[in-house]
Amino acid sequence: PVFDEGGRVVAEDLGKKLERELREHRDKVLGNGSVWSAEAQRDAACAEGEAILKELEQVKTGVDDDAGDGGLELGGEKVQEQEQEQEQEQEQEQEQEQEMEIEQEQEHVREDPRQQPYSRDDSAPVRWSMQDLVKVPDSKSDGTFGLPQFYRLSEFAVFKGMMASASPLLPQLPDFVLLSENYFKRSWRLRSVRRLKNVICFLEWVPDKDKLSRLCSDAPIDPKHSRQLDEMLNNYVVEGPEKILQAEQLKLIFRDLELGEEGQHFLETRKAISVAELKEQLGSQSFYKMQRGRYYIGLSLDEAEHLRCSMHHLRPSQWPSQTGVALRCLGNLESVLHESLLDAYGPVLSSAELDYQQEVAEQTLRFANS
Image: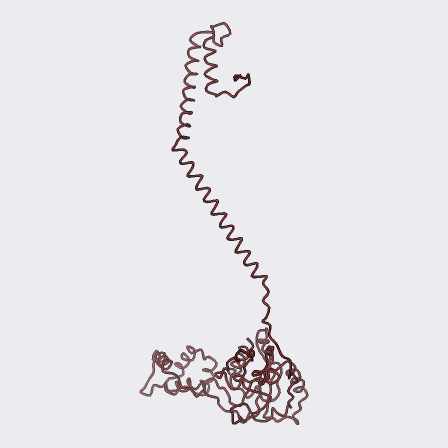
């Protein structure tokens, strides 16, 4: 063992330890405690020991060189890169935690409705008789609907308060879609804030099937759409100076215009048409077979309940054969039924030519419900 000045044992370098032991064994007299019995053995062993010491010294020198300035610089760069990577990872983790906290906060934020001074005055139901549905309504001089318990959806508006204007009217909505006074009274739109009900049930009503007529659009095709229609029709082979379209061509045209059902209904009665007449009928929307004198009315739930009960008590002697009513439910469209019909009485279904007008009414009332 090696001792320091205070007599304590200290750790000795391996190279120095081997060098010391080699020197001690070499200096011993042969045969007197020496590990070698001959001088040649001693010299060979000492030479091998010195070679090992020299290799150790070379290894030590190489390690010291690597730990010099260059080694320190490379080591410092690696340490710095590792620290930067760790900082970036920590920043990313912090950002992710903050985003998760924000998302959780947004999920738990309560979205309370705006506080409004909702009124419940003048909420008594408007009573009307089933016999009112037998009458053919005539528009009044001011353009409003002929029966006081119904009004056009295009006249519907909501009062937003004294300091705000009422919601704008939508005159583009079809005139055959109506609302009942029991769903929302027209007088409320000018004087009180009301909670809106969901449009769940509606009435399809034909006052007199014998007075049904074709409902066409009065607005002509605008020049832009007319040019687009001409470009489309030019893709089909048109024979003769009058440009007559035959059945096979019409099938392709109706398919491309997504008028499959309407086109099939048209081809059952006609097999040819001129381009000019086709454009005229597309502009007037006569292909859709909509009917003037057929109405769709949004009802309140109480009103729909009483109406269905009254329909079940109707007898032929109490009801004209030309008047038809059908009770429908918007929610049924989202069910496996895919059909809004709940109940019907009279020729309301048999007098319809196509389903397009009904689909327009359903989608319009769904829009009002949103």
